[in-house]
Image (tube, rainbow, N blue to C red; front, top):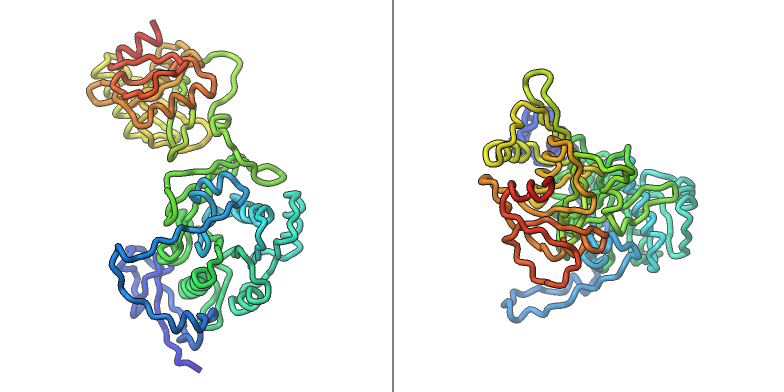
Length: 453
């Protein structure tokens, strides 16, 4: 038997230490150093083929390297394919993280039951009967989807050699363990070793591997940070458990853009793809109310229409309150200062509350003009026409600045039935065939006069 040794790992960042210390020198966290018994590996769980072992790599000039196009196949889930950049790449390792109960297992089981290729779904958290109950609730049937409940990687690879799946799903990486390491499942060394075995298998057999990862209390994927460096794609499944909508974001993607996002609605029969996100971000109301404005924002290359809500009232307790939900509080302070200094609106003694409906976080500066319009609408108690939408940035001098991809924003507003689009006069609008009415302004005063004349 191989010689064993004792090592110390930080449970927060995965850094290895020679001895126990109270504080990790890498992440500066206290009381996160734990002792683990590590056994030197005698053999790999997934061995290379004879041809792979005999192959010798040589350095090549850039111009001599042959470029092989990435082989992709669709998952029949348009939102996931968009986030991945066009579908699953053969040999790619995808890590999906998210809070407990957010719908990670439901999403991957739904995908496993949709893909026409042979899928092996390995679960270390649920029994086969529990997974069958979920599959019946999803009302999907796929004879090419095989369910395995196992946590030992050696047994998993034996089943893989027999089944030879086209796609492998692991739920979750924190439940797996390998015999080559004497440590409990979920520990730093076990996560690192089992991940390395799965990545080695994916690259040598060109089999896509989908991993589910738990997150810690800070919201980061649990385990060593090197796990996120080793995989090809890192996806984050976000959402409020009190709401039905979920957002799938790409934090890392070696085969596509990280600016895309997918939106789902959690229903009793699974996750529904939301092709028109504006339907969930704009509230339905019978009467026109003051303090609301529609903004055109971009998430990646996808234009969205979002609703900005503002409430301006006299400060009761002396010190005015400024509260935001889904918007940067410091940017709100800047906009209020611009309105006070450049436009002459006395807001210094008033409470200002700002909310972006739908529970999403927006950092796009193009919604500044909509924020200004919502604040002035609430302050004047005058409703803005619901057929008007905004897209412009507000500068410190009170000027209305241009934003990127304005033609896409205008086209999306036209498609959703808006009649008027307010933006900066300095925008370079390439298309002249827009049927929507364009109002071009250069200062806050012009926008105010246009809206509330």
